[in-house]
Length: 534
Image (cartoon, rainbow, N blue to C red):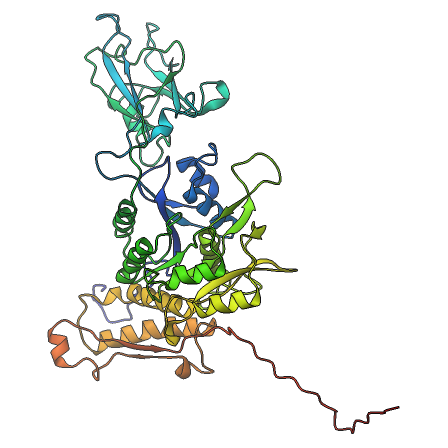
């Protein structure tokens, strides 16, 4: 408030409170499972190129990676950003990181003293080559730098990183003019090797380094230049990963992002019991939705048995199953015309995200517009009878439609109840609840009275009105589409004294038109019809 010294009109500027969502609101895809290379923990990936930079592409043909194929098909189907969790064996038999220790350039004692350890950026045999590709992995060249002192002594060194071989064309990174002196700035900026290479923002995607604390004085403590490329060694993939390892790392990874809704896909996981644990996690989390892959080689009858059998999937509204597997051009093969069958989860998750973006979460990710780009065929062509049996079992068929392509022809969850039968209905509920939580966080610790109640009502009414106008809710008027109740009628003094604000919201969600029924009959147009006979 301005200082009042004389009569007059004073202007005081202030910011009126605005309440906006703290989260994107719409879901992002999450893929979780084992890979031979890549960082651990959840990583946000914005493109296939981003993924390849961190986890590698299709350099090695066998064994094929379900995770890589899922992310590849996700982006080909229109997916944008996604979260990737690489999982590993969690006990002592897990993967080991490849490494090599380089000595400094001292001549006494002979061979110098250890000064720099270079590790592969993450664990696995990928860093040191494999039995099928012994010349693969990471190779390191240590070269003299270009910065010299007044006496001509070279003060810096350069690290050249090569992958899958030691030829010049295998160079993937070059770290120019770094030193082994903490805080060194002889190139105008900090060029201490661990600080530069291990930076979480601009550091290496291939290696990490550890100062071995050589006692030689600088610049003798710089690693000695290599006569030829040195291969990192010791990397192993460890024992086979278990489903328990995968689910544990899914939970620990996504628990760090509690407010973000996720479309969860577990590439390669086809055991009903394991998938049941993932679905249970999504339900407990509240804002997760699981896209379940079908196992390979199942007929439609076998697929129904797999879902509904004694050890089948739980009847959950937060999961949907798709069938059959999809045929794509094999990215592991350089030969034209070679195809590969992949689970549908990556395609479907990409379709969810692209449909959310173009039409909104209330639109079912299915129909003639739900074309799976990059799909060339199907493992099994379903007849009308097959589609009927699959639909009655809440399994979403993927079919080939002439003139359109391969499309998703189902939008059901695993729920047996009509109210939560459809994917867009359940996902709309997740979207609305996520957004409303984010929109009302401002209310925490505010005075609990009618002013706060009116603010909450105003914020949620604006949001729901926008959602209704975009086609997300039924009703020809706002009153038919939603209501928000937050006043003294549902906030008695007993609730106020406990620090509780009660908000009641009702919404009329959109249901998809799953069955279109046309009744047709002969009409004479008001004229008599004569049938001549001879």
